[in-house]
Length: 67
Image 1 (cartoon, rainbow, N blue to C red):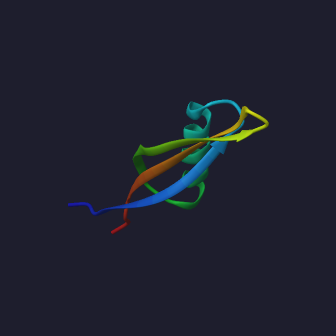
Image 2: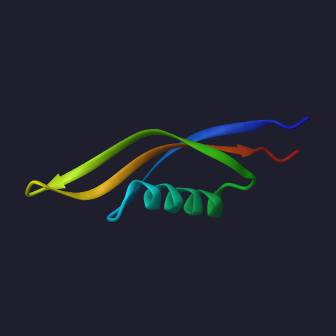
């Protein structure tokens, strides 16, 4: 039997939401061992001068705890 934990992170990209998601998972995997999945809880954009300047995602990252 395994036990998993969920943690929330925020990641951003200048390009699009998909890039922000990939960057968030990549970074989380450097610190958290056993990352097994994630879901996007929220998406936001930052605007400057009437244009989108940044895409942000709030991710719930699941990782399996070591025995």
